[in-house]
Image (cartoon, rainbow, N blue to C red; front, side, top):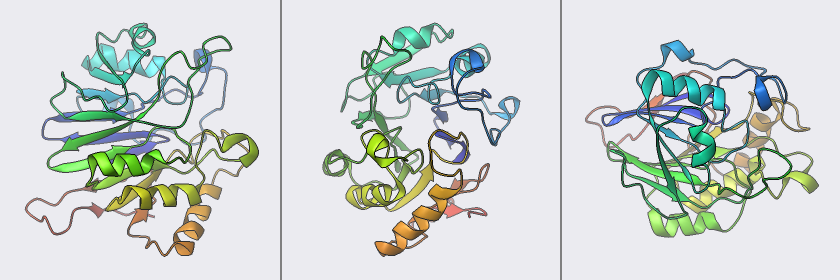
Length: 270
């Protein structure tokens, strides 16, 4: 697994390669011209990607559902896109041919990798007149005997306990830590680092990795503030750094072959 940036991970498995919420555009907004501009390029060049079999698309916001990137993926790899209900029509406009839409707690029927859509506390919209007309969510997938939870975009809410009850054990959780200030406005849609640590505990995840930070300046906190705040939140909750890590952009985690006692090694993590 390699952190490409924002909420984009490359997950390489024996059954095929997966991308989460891929965005390679310079702006998170309409026509690749409006909206926040990238402050850090994608850590894997698009042309360096291995063949992509599956795209997990959590919701339709511009920083998670980038039609330009989806079009490039469609032309090069023809991947299966797994996404919550109501997003298929938009995704097809990018040239994607194979789409499976899921409701919360539904599992895919067309993927070689078992995937279940999980709840999230967020919203959807591409413009002023389509708010909440498509669903949003996270994903639980099982790859090479490992269970991986990708949270997508979400506020903190009790559903993390529900995910643990239904889908545990969770070997690795990918949890957002950025775009959270001011709290009076953002608390209903994005976790801050302290809430992400609580989500990690609620999930009972063996390990968690931070995402959704350091790529786009989406909200009022400094671009590097989420990483500092995560360290404080870990200390306050006695969560060791080895249990909830920040992995460098372009750096990877992997499962050592034949070593079940050490589920993850992280290369050059920060």
